[in-house]
Structures are given as C-alpha cells and as structure tokens.
Image 1: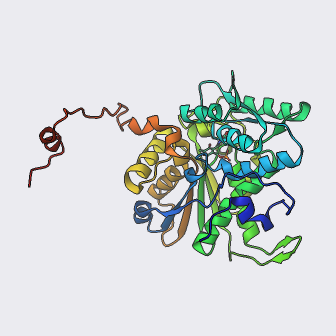
Image 2 (image 1 turned 120 degrees about the vertical axis):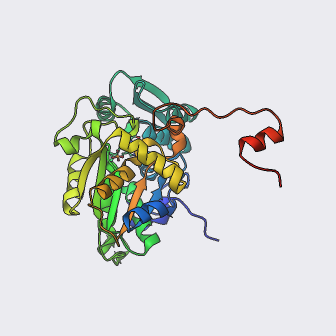
Image 3 (image 1 turned 135 degrees about the vertical axis):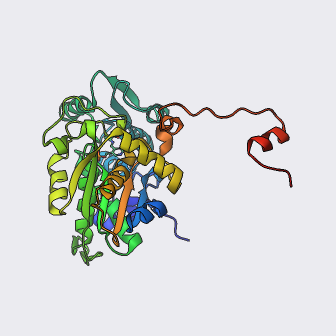
Length: 366
Ligand code: F0G
C-alpha cells in the first residue's frame, strides 16, 4: 500500500528541491477533500471542503513549513523566527523541532487561541507575546531576519508559498480537473497567492530539470477570498491600522502578500469580499452541525462567504466549488460551546442511574 510521504516528496518535481536535499517533514498534506452535502444542496453546485485541519499541527501552514524548514537547514541556519496569529507559530515550532533548530515566535498579546499557544510551548519554541498586533509582530520578525542570525519562516519567504501551492495540486489530483470556483479565507494573503500559483502551474506545461511535464488540468478556477469585516484591507483598498475580529487567525490589517493576492483575484476573474463575525460563527456552526467538519472560526470565513453570496443570488448552480477550511476546530474550541444567542452551552448533569439517563434521553424501555 502507498504511504503518503509529505508534500515535498509527493511533488518533488514541482518544488525547488534536488535529490541531495535533506527533507524536513512530518507527513503533511494528503488531506481529505470532503463532499459537503448540505452546502451542495443549498447551492445546487457540487461543493467540497479541503480539510486542512488534518495536517500534522492542525492547519494548512504545515505545507509551507516543510519547505521553509528544509530551506532553513539547506541554508545552514541554526535558528528560525516567525510572527504569527497562532497557526504559523505552532507549525514552525513543530517543524523546527523535527529539524533540530531553535525557534522563536512572536504573537500578538492576548489575541491567539490557547490551543495554538500550547502547541508552540509544547514543541519548545521561545514564545514572546508582543504588545501589538500581528502586523507589528511581522515587522519585528522581518527586521530580525534581515539584521540578526535567524532565518525568517513567514510566508514572505518564497519557500512557504512553494509548499502551500501543493494544496491546489491535491484538489486537481482528487477531482481530475480544477474546480470552477475556489473559496478560502484571506488574512496575510499567502494562501490565496499559493493556491493561484499551484492552479496556474498545473494548467500549463511545467519545466523541470528532467524535462517538461504536461499540463494536468484543463482550466484554472475563479478565486473567491473572504476576510473578516473588521480586518478587511483588500475590501477597503488600503491597510487597516486596528484590525479586529473574533477570528484571531485572520486578524491582520496589512497583508504581506498584497500584490500576489490582488493578482490572484484579478487574473482569475475573482473577488475578495468581507463577512461579519456573526456570519463567520454561523458558518462555523453550519460546518460542525450539518457537515460533520469541525474548524476554527477563521477557517469558516470561506464558507460564510459562499453562504452569503448564495443568499445574494450570486453562486452559480451546476458547478464544482472547493472551499479550503484552513484549521482544526480543536485549535480554538470555545466557540463550539457558544449558542446563537451568545450564552454558553451547559452540559446536563445526571445521576449514576440508567433509568434517569434513559428518561433524560427520551427513551422508553423495549
Ligand atoms: N485560516 C487560518 C486558520 C489561519 O491561521 C490563517 C493565517 C488564514 C486562514 C489566512 O491565511 O494568511 O495565508 O491569508 N494565519 C497566519 C498565522 C497569519 O500566523 O498563523 P493567509
């Protein structure tokens, strides 16, 4: 039986590696493409979820981190650094451990989920909570990378985008062609840039050192990105100085991959729009209660966008639509315990007694 070998080995001929490269991997990628039955019924299109929470550290960041950490080792780095809203730091910490490198992570104080914070600590990273937001953290991380002996593993490092483009390859490999529309959340804008790069590369002949690979897909999708309304610089058309949203993963006001994200949107004939925190939480609830897929709030922004566009009569039927759900629900589980009216779910307590339990469940003895 074939054992998945991680994205670098699976797609080596399309990534900047050679046979001599020492690959740092935790077996990332190969994530499920799940048919979303209720979203398909709603829209009349075939909707699929690319469930990136199934990666080793629970988010899509692992696809880029395997490449970034492999590049760090190749460059002879001893230490890596990143800024993060949580998932990048969790991934960097894990892959640095696998690589035997030191890792420092800068996170916005009080604005990252407990699950992500725990991961960075568990993997032995030095975690500093900065008195500022993600954009401030990234400024510092970039300056550290430029002027100090640390290797930057944020997505401004092109190795990250190279790794993340494999998400698009897997979608095409699963469906047999590119979808008509690809939907995803947008924060620092690395992922929308990476997917677009992957889709374009798969739709054309690709030059490698061993010759030219033929095109794999017949087309590229339209890219639909969604930001949180309080952190939507692409919708505003300029950076936001005080971004705010409950979806802390995408609480970003000055995306690093601005130009490539705009190119992905415009070249694909797509869009980048905003969804409110309430729409994000509704989509989060939809995914867990109707589809059986548990994601973190930021990951639900794409689904929120699709539902919103459908309500506006702007989702075509009879198409194939893929939504990347970017991170696992266990990263930030508190939102699952919150009901629509904002109160917290209280589990019912029962005595240690089968008759009372049966009565509580509404069961009658047969
Ligand atoms: N979804 C999740 C769960 C994320 O963690 C992020 C980004 C995004 C979506 C947006 O992706 O930045 O490529 O547009 N998280 C980064 C981090 C910023 O530090 O973990 P993007």
